[in-house]
Length: 285
Ligand code: AMP
Image 1 (cartoon, rainbow, N blue to C red):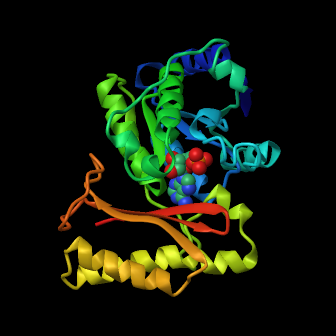
Image 2 (image 1 turned 90 degrees about the horizontal axis):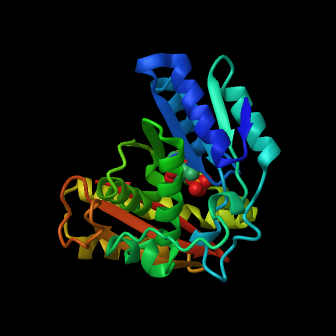
Image 3 (image 1 turned 90 degrees about the vertical axis):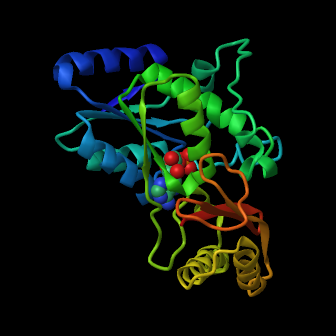
């Protein structure tokens, strides 16, 4: 498995891989911040199923973290990540792109990608500047990798909306593929940040998926009013008062604008603090 450290190395990898596979080459990109888990690996597997070769980027992007957020202590487990990818990639052309911060943000960098309106909704409202950092790094990765397809998780549903908008607006031809949320058997959505949780907090964190399941079953029973669905979610959160709800919102997935009555394809997104760890989860109706 090749480890690429520079933009130049990634560009060369793309070029030489296309030369090997010829006109029918399909290159896949899986952007991650590392600390890989089965959720990330589901993206890698989807990419391997559909592409001739796959590059997984591992980069903890400083510009998407706020000043008081966890950039410094974000889990960095590069050797273990490579071992997991190595195990996945037997007989398959997989590369890891793991650049330094200076490599992706050249000295004096002044250019950022701002997706108007969407960037200040949901997580963007709670984490000002977060989606500006996400949009900027994803645009850089899409441009440099020049892959045919890029794989993202529904787990970060607001991020998906931002990325879809940005690729359409910047005329980036890479096809964006969204993969379902991978959960533990108990419902907890896998996240690199779950590593921060104590065993007790992992139990408390189940309230997020429980609230979503309640919403889903009420919707299935015919309740489409977001006021009523939100009330039901708040009642579930009240059962776990140590978990501090940041938001539960019902929006149109494409625009992230609030809706009053649910129709198919709408998004229910929620975020909550378990101790100091901020977790997110969602469902698409
Ligand atoms: P991250 O490393 O947290 O930036 O995530 C990298 C990619 O993996 C993003 O597209 C995430 O949405 C996706 N991802 C993270 N957790 C999960 C999960 N539990 N299921 C599916 N995809 C996920």
